[in-house]
Amino acid sequence: MRWLAIDGALGAFSAASGSDDDSFAERSAASDGNDALERGLSIIDEVLAGEALWSFDALAVGTGPGGFTGLRIALSYAKSLAFAAGLPLAGISSYDALEPQEPGARRATFVHGRVGIACVRLRGYGDEVLVCGSYADLADAVSRHVPRGDELICYGRAEGTAPALGERGIIVRTMPNEAAVPALAVLRRAMTRSTLSNAHAVVADYGEVPHYATRSGDPKR
Image (cartoon, rainbow, N blue to C red; front, side, top):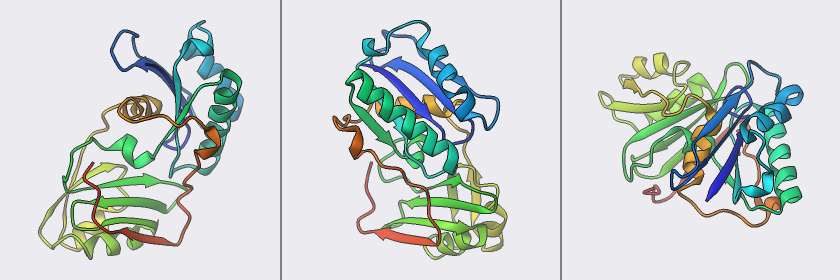
């Protein structure tokens, strides 16, 4: 399948294309700053490189959490393109885009929203934990599940919470991002899952605060 992916939640607006059988070389492009509305379509056009949208098999979009404005614009673009070309659309969580698929591995994935506010998904310590709030809120929630002295593997942007975790006796090991362009991470994750035929079914996760949730039986995916 040939994919076009869009993301605006994980920083600068970006787009990427590629195929799950490597027959179509990956391409990607990102804006220089917070100009998704002004440059979004030109970035998508740059990635298409003259190819028609309907020559693709599916679209993917990052659904957050993350930056509110970029996420809203990227989702609007993706749904509009999906409807226009009659293509299925896959929604990819920012957490999934940032972390590798390691069943059962203990890890925390951090995503930033507005200044001083972030979200984390903690897996591998029993129930899955999702928290959005201040850095201190995240550190308090994580420390309730991760034993003091444990090493915690972190993906995404953990720098705001890392000092507070260290104060609680947790050893933070930050892992590098697998893709420099966020849309490329969304693309690679989309290739491993089924698409959605109805774009209306793809919804945004804005990381609303205060937010704390657990899901019983931490998913092994």
